[in-house]
Image (tube, rainbow over all chains, first blue to last red; front, side):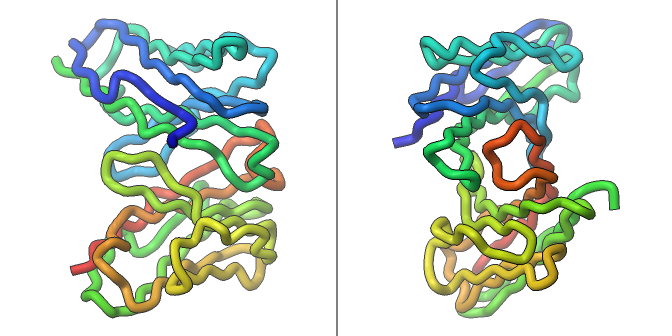
Length: 114
Length: 117
């Protein structure tokens, strides 16, 4: 069973609009939660990393939130641009995994249309 | 180079053929990871190196998969007697920190897309 669930699986939005992507996880205990952006045919690129004590972090038009009590995170994209079309992957780290493993979600596929 | 470099970018292999995928991590990065990513899925862990030591290979799906990093920099993932189910994107990632549990960023290469016919 995947310990990181993302929704919606895919999303089409108009350029200039905002959108919010959800990540629910069951990983426990918890070290940090990361959001990555993966363009088609490219490797994932880090957007944000949040520890247990952080509940929001921004990177330009991307804002991630974290509620460690409910084990939920969201990634909000403001004023979307065509270049935001990508898969957004939520990744959770647990010390129980040792140092070597990250729990990856399947990604939210976002398509921005003009 | 400025980032993680992987080669070849694309590889087509006939079933039963051996393949070798190369990863050049960012210079000085201690940790190196290999992941397998199927279409529409998130990356799945294969193996982890800390410098030249392979500390975790529990994600390798079979004994046909072998990875090495002999001098603690460049790594090679070898797949012997390829099967159709091996078709996937193979991603390499490196980090300055030991392991993936810290808050250090993990830098990914663009991957090698392997297609086994």
